[in-house]
Amino acid sequence: MFVLFGLSGLAAGFLAGLFGIGGGLIMVPVLVYAFTAAGFAAQHVVAMALGTSMAAIVFSAAQSAYGHYRLGSASAPTVCRTAPWAIAGVTVGTVVAAGVSRVPLLIFVGCFQFVAAALMLSDVSKYTVVQALARQSVALRACAVAIGGVAAMAGIGGGTLFTPFLRASGMDTRQAIGTSAALGLPVSIAGAASYASAGYGLDLGGWTLGYVHLPALLALVLGSVLTVRLGVAAAHQVDARALSRAFAVFLVLNGARLMASAL
Image (cartoon, rainbow, N blue to C red):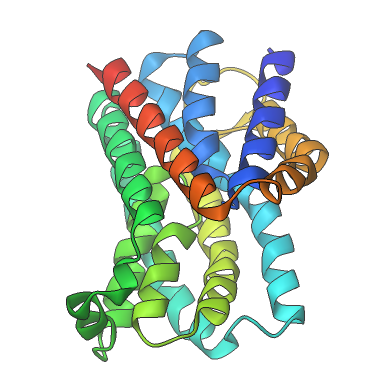
């Protein structure tokens, strides 16, 4: 079983490096397939995939946040204002995800893969309506709660959603990406802790901390260390627009596969 998770970790690390994403969009489908193939109880598979993904993101988010902070591309005041609200959203999202049955949760994760694909292909931050909403005084808090909730239910760090929102609010692209990366750390820590707590006491087999599967977590972290640089190197050999389209196709296929497995 550890070999299965190890191969999943290698694939997730390479694809995360190739597509420049924190990994949650890739890790959750991989973990769902891996946990299902390993014979885990169907009703816990999705929650375990989400919890383990959030725990794995903690490590990559910490490196990313520190790197952006050193380069001065993360807005510390924005992170401080946003993080508490995002954590509140994560807590609510985890409770919802832990209480929902397998089928609707799989459908939600599958649908979010489609949304993420659309975000890869279009710059929503340029739309007037989005800009008007993002610049409202209460928008930051409200959107932080919403994004935190979605992040917990999709097993991501939130960068896919935070970046376009921050750009729409008037922040330049480099600063928006850095700030979004920094926000991924509190979001992933809160998500990992919430899933560990939500699954505490359940019979999920050995080597689990609540809904966090420790061997899978170790495999994903090691996989990222071993293969993420290969993915980054490969990304520099491919046209950026073509890469975005390829990743969108990848997400659509993932989403369709998750939806099909739910039905």
